[in-house]
Length: 557
Image (tube, rainbow, N blue to C red):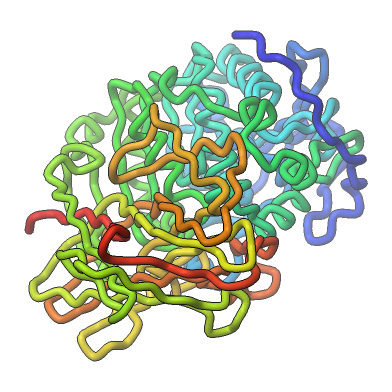
């Protein structure tokens, strides 16, 4: 494995695991064997890593004779606590009774199901989390090295057939990219189910605007330790530009050649949507499949239909016993009409090669979008801090149109009374009566947008090597403040989506200076940006010399 330079990190003292509210430790650190509900459970197996520290894992197998067989193993790696198991999640998550057992760790595979089908399931407490030794590092080469060590340790155990798979949602997906890029010999297949892959652009800073609600909540879940843990929130705040800290979190996606079943969601705007699709595009695996849905992510992962697909995939690559996966379509997507209403379709690739990109030009004088740019320029103004401060532009389709892929907003803008501005963009759908159509959003909600985009104007500089006409990628290396009275062209990436607009339905482009969707339920995950640079007045320019337009991905039907 390559050597990565050390990056100084802000660490914090861990909170005693015994004080974890709602996550009580079942036992201490002693190794015990439990025969229960047809499962042989070994808790707190010590594993010595090449770093010299010892971490603890829990091992689940079917009790009796199956436990003596050579079994493939599924690894769930996360710092949320291997003991933190339940057959329920938040009611809003949509997981139905009976889909998972009480042995299921958060976002991880259910041992009751998988052990019954000839697998071992392993949950790990990474170094520095809970009672494991060492310090907890969130992403980067230190965590991926430790995960590599565990994969290789598991692969040579006497109960193992030498093949390890990884599966899980969110954190349990992100770590798969990291360790698979290191190519551990015993890692036979990965199943990342919605996980960001660009730590700066998808997790810490959306368009250069700091995320301020999900990250504090996520960081609060990472502090149970007898030693020290990486303070993710503090490190993020310490590094507002893309620097060596963020480089240390980068994943060499192109190095991944492990068989991969990748699952993304149009609904996870602001967290996993972009990163999962970028990972699929960039990994080099000769055997890779993609599914993209528009549902709530935990419900989708544990849905019996999804678990059946997971088993077909792992049976083929870990047990050599099922060839169903070889007949799968390369890509399968859901084309949404609204929350919980969608059409599934097979495709040969992602992005779709038959996409026809069309420009819809903004008209500030009418609040419309259209195929032709106005000959005369016009502008509109709004107060970014006012409750009604926004700009909206509508386009009503004459025929059915499917929009699948990236959108981009090119927007000429200036800030009167400020040297910077934060732009928030939403693509919305209105039905033929003009009523806003809701979509599934952020895993727990059903009142969301078609898609979202963000940009801090001072971060407008593009990375020319990575940018494409339909997908601008900003470098975030420096800030370029605005000049008084000088409009600038902003290229705003809008995250991928797939939506069917029927004839007489309307696409609405909404532009604001703050989060357009901010109805967070207390205690539940949500993405917000409360540290903005907005003041004064935002001025948007269209027509004439100002080619402000929305680029849309039209799929021939």
